[in-house]
Length: 224
Image 1 (cartoon, rainbow, N blue to C red):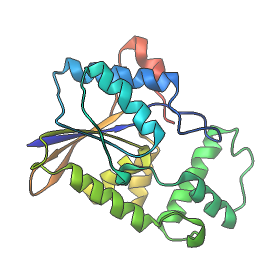
Image 2 (cartoon, rainbow, N blue to C red):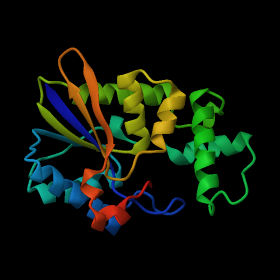
Image 3 (cartoon, helix red, strand yellow):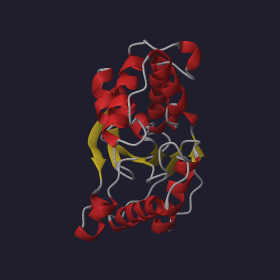
């Protein structure tokens, strides 16, 4: 059976700032992941990433740490949903909660509510880049593309938390509420592993951060 390692990007900038730029900490996370995969003796015959800058800036130190020189395919289906348009659409029909940008708990509660409203088609479509169904469809197409055993036996792909959670929903047939709960759990540089054949795709592991579990690296665990 063939394998897909689906990686979330390394820690990026602060929400409200330039979130599409991987931080020094994020590059360290990515490099440690590359070293870990290399130590396991893993090689990849297909490499892909989304179009976003943070995907590219995660993949570069990861591949460098593996001494793997391989051209990455750029798949738009691996892009994150448009966070800014989702936030604007949600706040257009809901009052902005106090301390939204200063209290992490308020921020993540609001994200969850916005995602749930999006999945239920409760937000004004004219303010959205895509519907939940369209997001689901493009992620499903990207996962099926990556999990093609005729093209590769071991695949490495870098994406984002929302996309990875949606991939879980596609493979496991999850309800939107469950996919959204998973979205808020995905750690930076964590990898999820899928096994695939010509007939099916199976989840093997989710949100693994083995490369950050040593005591000296545990302070590198981040969620955004």
